[in-house]
Image (cartoon, rainbow, N blue to C red; front, top):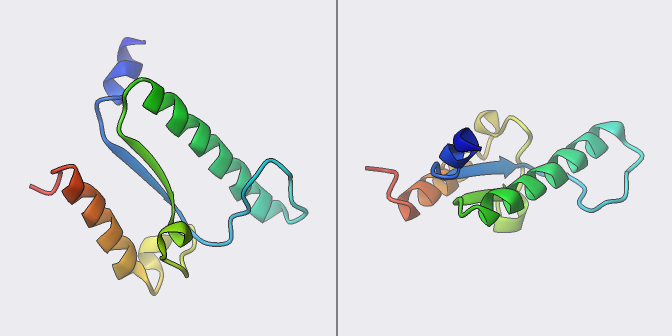
Length: 97
């Protein structure tokens, strides 16, 4: 528990790209369903971390208006938009100093 509580002191953000199904219902495409499961687990982890006071965000890029991202978003054509979102997140937490 001591080590876990240390993690709650580290601001953390996780970004997910496009075409990830949401919800509890499995989808036929295994690849998409794999990402659906990862998204759900990340959201559950986010809730647990926040319940301990952590500053944790799990972000769907399309939900914040950034479309065209894969799971390797820093190599995508819209990588500047993704980087700008990351910089904004860091700036809001004064981590860009």
